[in-house]
Amino acid sequence: SYATLPTRGECQKKFGIPPDKSVIIYTGALMPNKGIGHLLEAIPLVLPSYPDACFVLAGFPIEWLREYVKVHQLEKNVILVHPLNYFELPFLLRAGDIGIDPKDSSTRQASGKILQYMASGLPVVCFDRKNNREYLGEGAYYSSEISAQGIARGIIYFLSNPTDAKTKGEANRKRAREFSWEKSGRKLEGVYKRVGVKEKQ
Image (cartoon, rainbow, N blue to C red; front, side, top):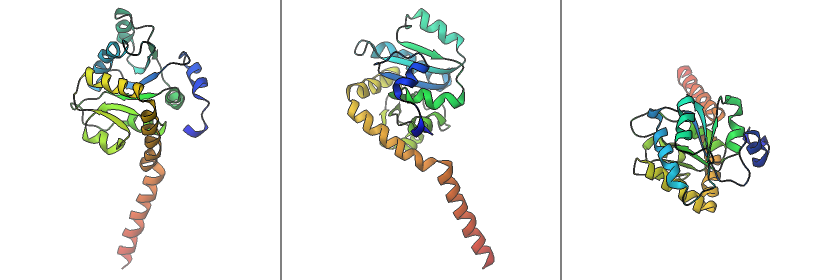
């Protein structure tokens, strides 16, 4: 449970994240169709305004990303986490301030990472897609422009408005309960009971 995790500082130390940094997190597949390119291109757009921002990218495949970070001299601002054990994910998200889902409209599936971000109380930067709005409601910065610039504007907005970021994060934490297995199970149980009643009639 996210409620029983260690402090943010302890979780940052666990992953080698420097203290007192603004931590922007992406977790999941590090492949083009997940929109990772938008996020990578957004990093140098954010750093002039927030040079101490720390981007944590966790997932796979990691080899090409290590080379990308080195070539673009982003070592001071990017931490790569690999492999990421699923059970370690809550600890990593506890260390963050903002969650990023840069998946664009070319992929239609819902994002499991968004539910994890929500449960951990992170505000989310993403593109203005129907699925995203259905999950996040008011808990995100939605970029209507599918681009690195759109992602960068969202990150800068939350870094510039920490109170709103916290408000949206808390809204996400509460809203995540609407999508919990427990609640879904109760709904399903109710359906079965109603069906059972109709069959007996």
